[in-house]
Length: 351
Ligand code: NAD
Figure 1 (spheres, protein in one colour):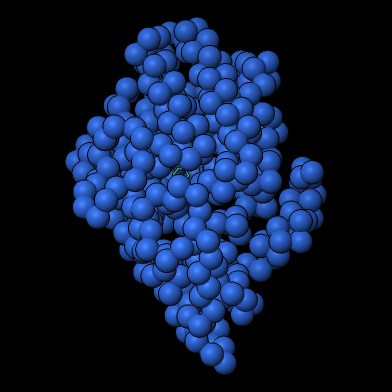
Figure 2 (cartoon, rainbow, N blue to C red):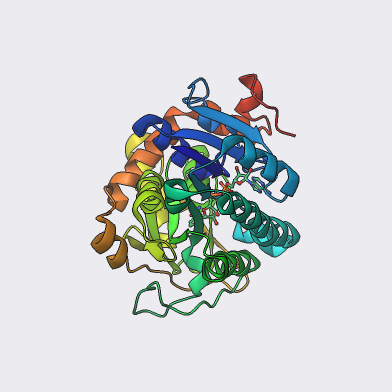
């Protein structure tokens, strides 16, 4: 099986690539533009594998995508390439529109042309899997869960751009018959997470004894999923999900941001003792504009239809994550120095 993974140098995409190379016999073609978020050092463990190939390209470049599909003849496309950081979308939404909406449209058109030329079993089994977020559903009150039929109500430029792309994918299924599946997932965490995101940011600042900035009162609730559990869920849906369907994915691990930061402090205190408990470093800062109060996922459907459940609890996954950052200093130090390890390893340099 030949699988094109877009955004495979990113946080979740690299976990998908490592899973496919490590635990399946699929050939993997990773298509990534290598924005600030793409880092080939996250793929050092698969770089020499004959089943793995990296192509540096923009999903919005239609000619490049058409050439790639013609050369690869993919059986499955797992589309993860995106601009993904909410704060960046507030500061500069243009790239979010370009990549998340126009880029997804471009990829859909190229996939449709490829699929229309297939026959028989190859045509029946082709899948276009679009990977999306729970943020498309907006914000919850204290009660309730997002299901696959919750109406869309995105609130940030990021979530609005992802909602747009989800609608395009469903429209390409209903209008043209393209065999698509969509997944919407809650917040991921785990190894190789870019240091600007909440959990790695707090781990690294806590290690350095610096203030731990928490938006507002820190009472916003997120559901957290260990990234390797997400990668497994994605492969399950890409290979066994019903076409035209959406599957919610989550960790059944709702936590207030302030409690997540507190747990990180306690783990760091245990693993790298410091003079004073790190909870004392927590500093409340002005809230993010339009900060959603609570996200939580109902994952009944993927469990019932496909038998997927997360393997990690939040506590076991967070422990593994803190340990990984302690053991993998070169990976995050290079990002913080603006010098990605991909360069050091002689892989494609990142501008
Ligand atoms: P990420 O920012 O870590 O990685 C995105 C990757 O896409 C990077 O490698 C980047 O170089 C690449 N990319 C960006 N623009 C591109 C373009 N125009 N052409 C080709 N490549 C491009 O993101 P992530 O956290 O790994 O998220 C992956 C996907 O999962 C996204 O679609 C995101 O919306 C979705 N998602 C993320 C989370 C989460 O908690 N991180 C949760 C649910 C869904």
